[in-house]
Image (cartoon, rainbow, N blue to C red; front, top):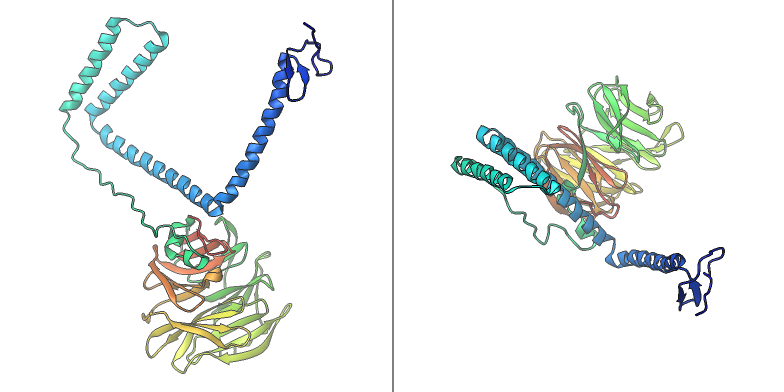
Length: 436
């Protein structure tokens, strides 16, 4: 029978097999290598197919898978915690603790005998006797007088909503999407402002700049009195604050504080402020409130126009600006009613208005944008959040704990809520869907 050398160059071995696929002769070692090349290609193709399969499963299916995995981790962690609590209760019983130690010794002894494979009937009888003794003692121990109240996990069809972007938006989801919190003193904090990187709050006589991980980046003393409102000017890359002693800017990079001299105070005490890309809007807290618009220049502000937005018994309690919309929370001092008024920043025309059903006279009410899904109203007195859609109707109202003071949209994917205890961060997708 003829002998053929291995096809692989420089291989001194004689071939042992002919590959019918490529008609080459291989020794045993190189035949395995040759076969592995086909297998590796199959593995690569499998990986490619798996990636394509993920497309058909869809991104939302992946979100559900992630939610399931994270939920399992939460349950496992909670289970371990409760197991430790049960163990602590049992350890308090000295007899139970001793019996547990005996059982652990028996288990170790059995493991040792199995490993050594050199046991006798006498040793087995001794271990059985020790085990039976523990069992008799356990049967005589009085039953624990506490019970476990384990509620069932109930998931209805609305626990996770599947639908179009607008219907997916649900305030109950935002509570579940809490992913980071920081306890800080907020006694003197009633407002905050944010840009894409940082958000600014005041605490007593200091200003604090935090990042998205709630790390304190910078702090400076504040000497300009009580802060009524603050907003961010992306054009100037500065925060703008209305305070008791005037209107102040804060550079986020240098933390330099400057008073805006070009904005006249006269008999007006500025209370609310809001910024668009081109303009700064200011208002007082006087009845029959007028909004003043100032064009944002490189280092200055130029008066552009003013617009009366309230009746003689109303005043603006809060305002926010996003895109081309100016949101105003207006309090009617006679009827003790509040409504949300949405106006165009281009013309000041009213786009729509809606009653908020908030009647407490002593209250702090504010709002922030929720991407394309409308507005979030913070009702401090009732400790609740109200979702108002861009079509002008109230979609959802929930109680929020701890009591909310203020809220800002922090970047496109984060909502920061200032509470009586600190700061809570919630995830929110740009399309309005929350990651649980």
